[in-house]
Image (cartoon, rainbow, N blue to C red; front, side, top):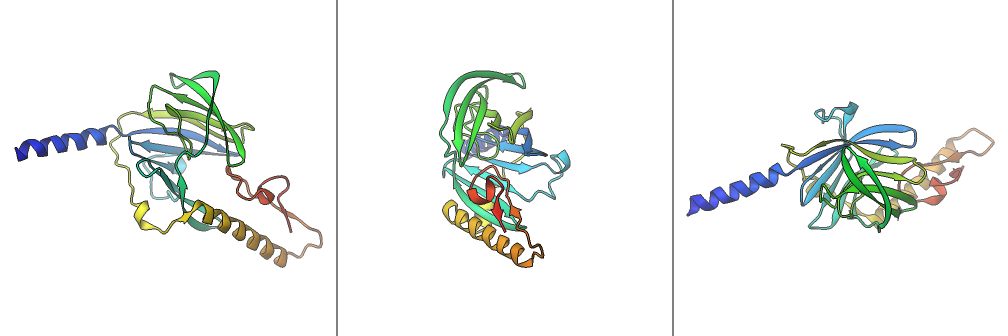
Length: 234
């Protein structure tokens, strides 16, 4: 009986492991282009950089984003002025509205939805062929996997370029226990104070008699004065 139970547990573990899949995305942040990888299972996913466009080279990967579905939580790392921050965020807190638009991506028919998320409007295309309520970066919460999403000004774009349905790679969830995480609210406060202190330092060290402007480009508008228009004056 013990042998039978052990066999069943082993089989379940194997099937759960075998169900992992990965999606490569071409990512555009303003004028910069990157490749990122989404590795997902039914309960977790991880979003990470692909250094030099090569998924197998993981030594230089620094920024990660882990989604924990049972906890409804995102664990992520982010860099601001060469300082690393670790943040806990709510899972898929964007609210979507469906549209009649459709598109075919990598041979999969996709439906469309729109949302406004932290200061920007986004259009997403998701496929029910993959019944994961997930997507690139922080996006998700639809009735299928998001294969493409872009801001309405196309400054930020995520487009699936390759799908691997049978991935022999386990999702590393160790980030949850490795670091002390800011809440999203505490992080936004820290973000604003860090930007203000940096601008003060620039102003103090500037020899120019005329004022300049300091602007941060990021998909989430956390500090509008520093991220919209010309930015903060110094």
